[in-house]
View 1 (cartoon, one colour):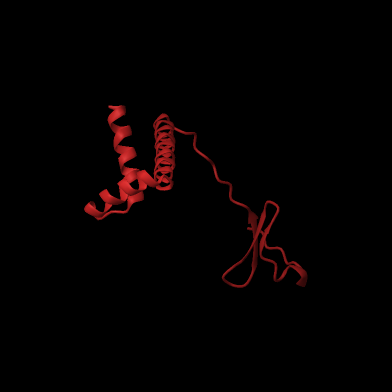
View 2: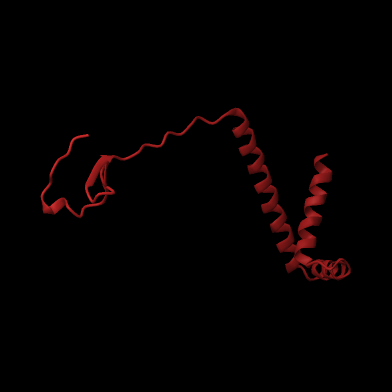
Length: 109
């Protein structure tokens, strides 16, 4: 390691400038090094499959939310779900949400 004595201007420098990182050493010296580079591994086939499944689940949950939201704005459906929700001690919205998901699961089988 080379030791370079810099003037008082660089005595209190710390942080990152471009590709260089300025650090304070344990004995008060300023250490200059290159910024670390992060490498990104290529996606594996299994990761791509999981990403596709997660995307499908996300779309399903969005559709379920839209259904439950629509059910809560329709007075007849809301009354029906609230009646069922009292018996099951759940919220009407979550009951509508689970109702949609159960129907979609049965259709998917």
